[in-house]
Image (cartoon, rainbow, N blue to C red; front, top):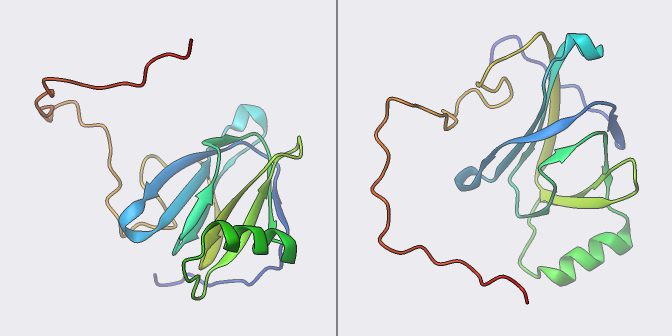
Length: 154
């Protein structure tokens, strides 16, 4: 994109605002979190957090606050043992919450950016992808004859 510059920042980085899973583009290995602008809560900007070349993850769909850091050697060794596929240029990012819970994303890169005001459905970090969106005028696919579900625990 014209005019866009990349600033390299050392981890950890903390986001002192709610972030929600906004898109998971499986075919391109991208996970996008967004923190929507909420001027009433003192959040005049929208923040996006993007992981690219994702090879594995264990995440929540929403975080009230989030810190992202590099995995320690021990954490990375455990993740590599759990998934022995080649990582190539990927690295492990640890996602920590205010309560100390953690998740992870094994990815080639992580980017984040902030933009004034609300944004709508399009992403400013991955504008080249047409993210799926609700289209009420589109006909729904035919329903399957049978849907299976796991039995409730007894």
